Image (cartoon, rainbow, N blue to C red; front, side):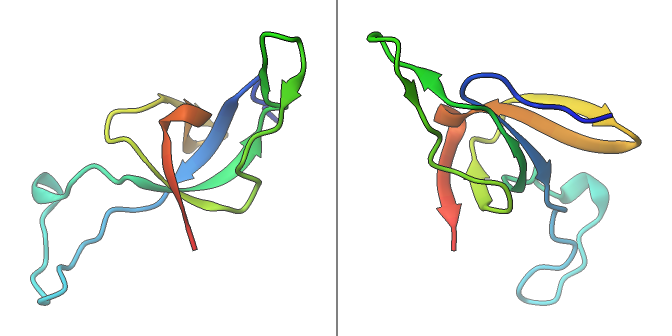
Length: 95
């Protein structure tokens, strides 16, 4: 199934949480923090302004982004987990 987000919605694949700290300590599943980094897999057409014009999103497919910890809605598609969030929930593009 293919999904096209609407308006200013972005569909992302959340990147896995790190299993080892920088110091080399292995983290169990219960100690891992919820990931806040993802890769954009689909982008809506953009937000509609008060004048009726479409404002294109700043992100594009393939961008790696940082998002708010509890942002978006989780979905499962073809056995893979994704997150759909609004563009305003994106904090930064990781370069």
